[in-house]
Amino acid sequence: MQSKNYILALILNIETATKNCSVSIAEKGKTISLKEFNDGGYSHAEKLHQFIKEVVEESGKKLSDVNAVAVSKGPGSYTGLRIGVSAAKGLCFALDIPLISVETLKVLSKSIDVEDGFVIPLLDARRMEVYSQVFNAENLELEEVKAEIIDNTSFKDYLDKNAVYFLGDGAEKCKAFIKHINANFIDNCFPSAKEMSELSYLKFKKNDLEDVAYFEPFYLKDFVVTKSKK
Image (tube, rainbow, N blue to C red; front, side, top):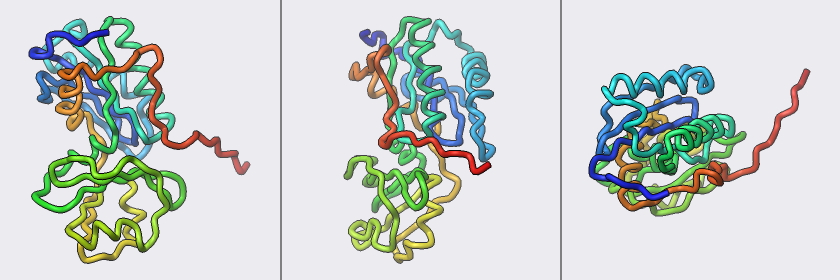
């Protein structure tokens, strides 16, 4: 499926990779309507379709006006990613429009602006593990996404060079280990559909699209079912 009319692109962005259920409508890469909710739990199943309806109405547009749907691809919560991707694919099939996927950690890294140094978004994984990626101040990727166990040597090469800004729900577990003078922890940052707007528009213009039928989220690790202790 080919993207078209990118100059007038109206894109619906869906971000459900973490506890933040977030939806935006963006026109030419600029957010014009945003709805998000984060109560510390996962309310995506209850909130997502309601938010989609509300952002479309508040933007003064119709769902049939949307040129593409973008979804946060992961890594992140298995259940959250499944809900977001299922909704995005359903809309793409129903409206016969393209699907765009946006890297979750790149979305998170865009939530702060820094003049210098490194930005390291961190998503909570199991135990002392996080999903991480490293960006420079211009939001250019310096490392690929990885899952790693945090200890007192984590990210030392970057910390020894310049200021490092840690953000995301994985940053909290790092505070007990990372005590470097260049370490800065940004609280209460989650991936948001607001920051997806520019990223999805750039992909739309490049015709960087997904196969709606076969696209799957980027889990990075296999899903593990935890047995009840009862």
